[in-house]
Image (tube, rainbow, N blue to C red; front, top):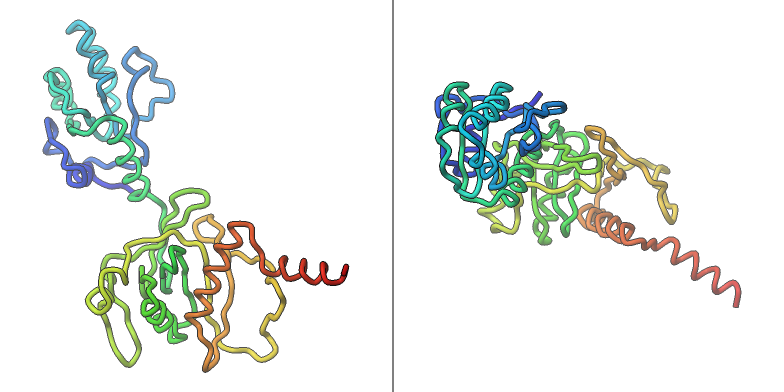
Length: 305
């Protein structure tokens, strides 16, 4: 199971550490934060104790209005489950009682100036991405007119050269050689780099180039949602599909199905142009348009005249 330390949250959101500074290595394993409510009145069925606990104005105001004995009981019942950490929002103060319990149980108590709603949205988005299931594959990932495309094929087939041609046409590189795929949802697959290859593209007979230094900031982006999986293959005689519309095929990564197609290579073929056409055609299909259907409709209309 993937995890990140509480310190990663402190660094990412510039959180103030009120208690438990020596225990920021506690692991966070769940991708959603939780606001304890019913737990303060003693109902702990289905309490997600593995989640980061966020205390906003509503929760802190409720605790402030309790007597000291009641407050200690309410807080004590929650901290004994040892969640990864507590985060207080809106810069709220008067937290001596909470600080005391967190120190005793060695649980980090953190604070942010952000409002509860805004902070939870940012925190959840960060945790979903950081804790998402992931895998690495050999290939190239590019963003073509806002559409994430995965280019696969045998080593030396021309994936990086195709990516370079696409960059020259105004599109963007995401990752070369090693593509990290992250599953953010049942239908959402993100492609990114592994950090080491960020901005780099390896071209045979040329060497390693930095696309940002060479072509500017617009030539690169850190991640993209994968919409198409394209495999580059050697040309095969009598194997080219010339049908008006190809039967949909899919590849699957981490349980997410991605539309798949094959492009055969031959000297003189504009592979980058074909990738552009495939990406734009996929986009039109999402809008409900099919060139093949329109063509057939025209033929039928002419036949009726």
